[in-house]
Length: 202
Image 1 (cartoon, rainbow, N blue to C red):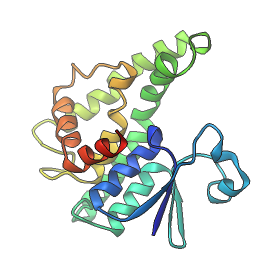
Image 2 (spheres, rainbow, N blue to C red):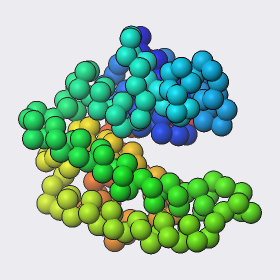
Image 3 (tube, rainbow, N blue to C red):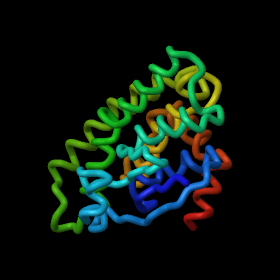
Image 4 (cartoon, helix red, strand yellow):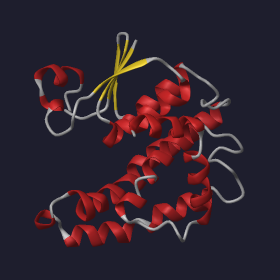
């Protein structure tokens, strides 16, 4: 039985979406990033003290998008690329989501929504908002003339990137200037697996 450590309102949500797509049985251990991830027991699983962590038999993995790549490859239900070239592109887009896209989204979310007003940094917020259009434009350009990142079929690359860019509206970041991203994100989040997950989480 797969065991997933983490709570839904975190990066754990990305892995929950993948598990729902794959229909793989799993158990969710609700470890919070505000305390539970710093216990000696948890630090033996992930010495970084972050969620999510996936335990699949003897395999223990952390980093949400790496976990999703592993799950899509091992329990393939059509989400794993069919060629080495597209495998490379799936890795490319997953790493890109973490290195280029996530930081301005998360920084904006933290300093606009999550931190108490007295702890928010207006300069950090403004800089993050200013950085967001560049990766958004890259993604919009990549989606021109195609339904999904690797062609006509939804796959792990789409799930990983959509799970990051999907936080942008929560952060108050506009997608209006990126019509290709808007349409693609709607297609990704209209999938039955995503709808089922939302229903389960209430």
